[in-house]
Length: 146
Image 1 (cartoon, rainbow, N blue to C red):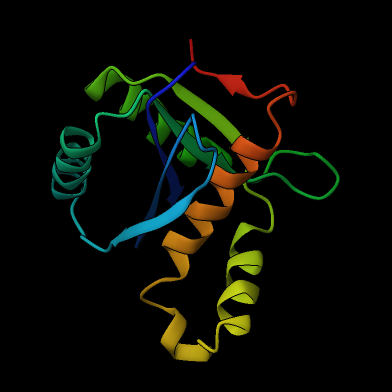
Image 2 (cartoon, rainbow, N blue to C red):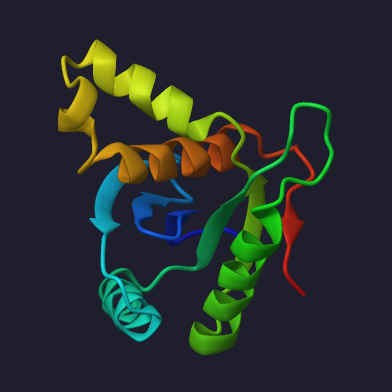
């Protein structure tokens, strides 16, 4: 992966956080929170973002436990990543998203956004942390979907 935009995703059953960055600058920014209920509508919105940003890569957070054992939500996140690859033909990298929501909440607290005010932006800031983790650890053995 040499250049181009990258979309980062924090997948959840109720909301999907989305962040954007570029392979050149390696700096992630929160983009939006998709809070649409139906799967088709969610993927339609993601399709619009892909059309707009033309990403070279998608990065999806996969949860792990502190002891490196599989998290019960990991298979659901992996299915989401596989659907991104299948529907949109994207290259997809999987990144450990452990503690991304806690880190996002801490970042928002430091910015003066607390409690219920965080709800509308927490997921996209978590996606920002996931994507920034990908950028910050280029030598880390990230898993790419085949």
